[in-house]
Image: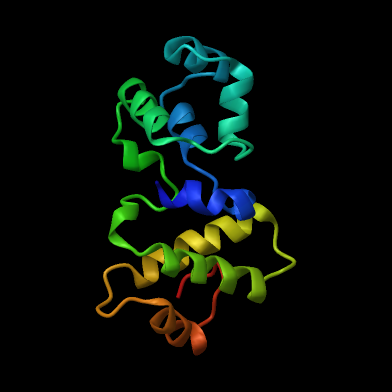
Length: 142
């Protein structure tokens, strides 16, 4: 199961995917993309707004039509490179540190934090806690 789907149940506002971004890059409306994929425009809207999780099967279908890789549609890209527990820790840290941020800002912070620790040796939840203990967690460039 993909990480987004696992976390979606409790944290769906933070589990935004990049479907709208890729749809807009290709110049498609929701209606046109829905027609090409064979689903309703309402379903596209629900996927783009994280009301429904984007399944691995749908990622593959959209990727073919949008001319990208399935992982390009994920918030975290190649999610298999990082343990689920680490993503859960990042989500928890963002929720604790910036509770008044909008859901879009929180989602951007989770993605930014993910990319800051991606590929670090010994990556586990305790490493993530220590890494961000003395680093700011905000949208400003560090």
